Amino acid sequence: MKDRVRSYLVFATRGYKIVMLIVLPIFLLAVDFIAAVVFRGSAMPAYIMLLIMAEVMSDNWYLGGIQEKNSQKIDYLKTSARGRQIMKSALIMDLVRRLVFLVVIAGVSWLFTIIFTAGEGVRAKPGLWEVLLVALLVYTLSLLGIFLCRFFSYLWVNLLAAYVGAIVGVVIFLIAAGGFLPVLLMDAVLGILGAGLSVLAVKTAMLKVEGSYYDK
Amino acid sequence: MKINSVVEAVNLEKKFRGFELSIPKLQIPKGFATALIGENGAGKTTLLNLLTGIRLDFKGEVSYFDGKEKLSGGGVQERIGYTGPSSFFLPHWNAGQVAEISELLFSNFHRDRFEAICEELSIPVKERKNVKELSDGNKMKLMLATVLARDTELLILDEPASPLDPLMRDKLCDIIREYLEQGNGGRSVFFSTHNIADMENVTDYAIILEHGNIVEEGFVEDLKEKYLLVKGESGDAEAAGKILFTMSKSSYGFEGICLADQLDRLTGMDISVETPTLSQISVAVMKVNTSLKLGR
Image 1 (tube, helix red, strand yellow):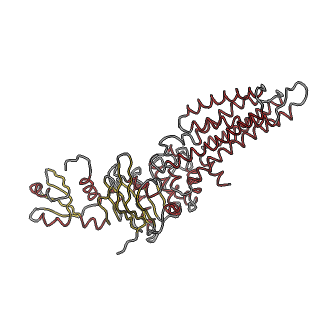
Image 2 (cartoon, chains in turn orange, purple):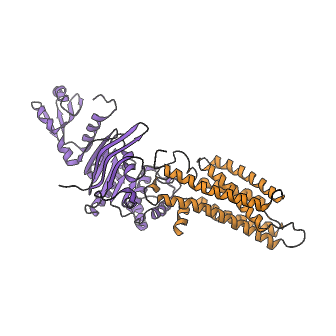
Image 3 (cartoon, chains in turn brown, purple):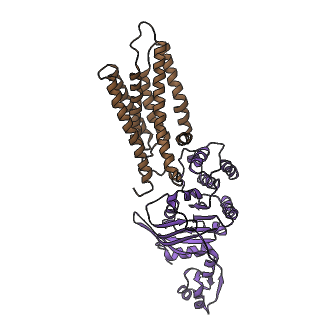
């Protein structure tokens, strides 16, 4: 497990580690805390946008362009028999980090709402299924954006995908919040989509790695 | 004298976009420094990529370490240190991350040795510069540090001298010599180079590659007996030109490389015979085999 985490971290830039693993979680929890204590509500819609954008943008610092045609960024890995496994571990740990991070952020946000928004005049509090919906929504949409962006190494592609993903994310959240579709159904659909995309993301990147040994 | 091979290949073939590498037999002697020489596009990097497992789509058989090992086992790569072209590392890695990934990739990587080599080679580690911010020379030094920080038996170096300054090239020769000496005959170095003159004092064996084929090879001392440097008066230039392997003329006379077994044919001419350098032999062999229009 330790080597898997090291495999994940070794591909990340210093900026990525600082922003995604330290600054962003602290910032989001602070926003949540303030939203719950001061405004007696939840900041979920705002940080659905923020999270999707941050995840999609930051991947450019991580494995940006890894699926790009003629990418030659991994030759050092190919000089070792362990190279493929390290790459696969990094890709999987990236997904695990993303999912754990989103579930924790959404979960803490939910706790803040439960603890600090008691009393009259407070709108309906989100349940655990709503919290899961937020985590899966951000996970699935950001992963879709990342998957598409990894075919290019241009930052503007990530930026474009980040904006589109954020808008789509909020629209879906509002649909859920408005009660237009059952939350459980949306959880199930997003869960299946997220799982499928996860497999696709790892398989596609590994196919690219495998193909780099051949004239493909 | 029986020479063991650190790498042996039979019927090696690789076709790619109109280029064809075709080597019926390749033997890299164990315990020596072997130079791979050839003009641009001759197939040097392709050959090194095949031998190091960077490319797997080729025909033929390759065996390592006295013919006992195959690349597929995985253990071979652990025993080979390879430095490639400048896009070898992820551009956003710094020296610390290069050490980190090296520890993950190779069980025989020693971080303390890596740091000592970085210090010795003046690689700017403390500045935490990214690979993309390093000069080509420092990128090569960083690659050398990663392979030298491992316990390997074979170094395969792709153009290690090209991005280095003259002082560092001299240091590179010392490093190669020291690496071989410490191995007591068990270590070998195979490197491609355009800087034949700079690397000559460390080269034991030379392989000259043209258009994907080996056109000449042998121990440097043997090659220097096979070929001779002939200098003569301009009056003899025309007659000598028909016998010499390659020749260049000036108003003062001519100079060219002659096969030693052809020397008798120059009898009667006012010539002097010298031992050629490896660089002179290589250029002569390449001139004979090149597709460049040189006007020999």
